[in-house]
Length: 329
Picture 1: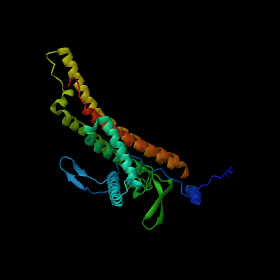
Picture 2: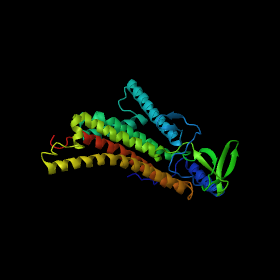
Picture 3: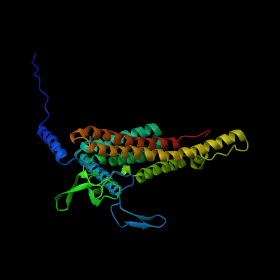
Picture 4: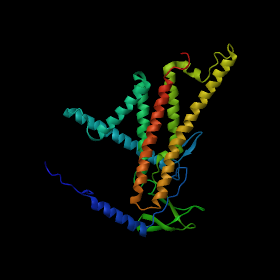
């Protein structure tokens, strides 16, 4: 019987880098205490001049959440192109099993499609799957952007407005400055970040909710035609069976309220969770050392994943329900 040699636990070959970052974090927190960025609900405007003016709407300005959405689209398109290139390369080599990121994306999309097929059936799976997959991936990338260093912390320098807490400035090099304590309310400075997580903008979440709810009605109309709207306005037995007819009509109004409430539910669930997570990271980042924030970053990683899956899955379930029969038919 061979003797088994016990090996001690090791950090790995890069353990000294971890120690170096911890020491630098302590030194930086001691000499340059972290500050809490300014928190506000509306997205910050980056341009003084409107980027476009539309009739009945007015001027539209460039905001930091618009920049974040543009980056989300670029990342998603980049992933798509990378997966497409990897699949073509695998086909030319005769490799049936994709490797790397293409294999991970294929596994995710296969899981989403199988879940859609089990819920909606094979007839409507191909129609509902694109909405489920697209919404899930976009929201997932948007939520995880708050974990990227520089988001919400690098931006335009401006003097704090009256009544808003500002901070002192520290010039690092020409054109590059940093904010440090102590606070200077009267002559302090703040930052308008170049990029702010787009999920913390209610315009984005409401737009996704409208797309989800409207396309649910479109798919229901495709499944049943004009008879689909009978569940919202049912007056067939209003006069022949007055009592039951009135009940059917009232149930239809409840269906209308239910569809409208989905917009509020979708919008504020995603917005509230991600905005609260952003505020938590701001507060924790100004209270504890850098290495102690890792557990909160992991928490936000999980919250962003859960919210993306919940948004996409609820959209898929509502679309699948719209293709199912209502009442006697």
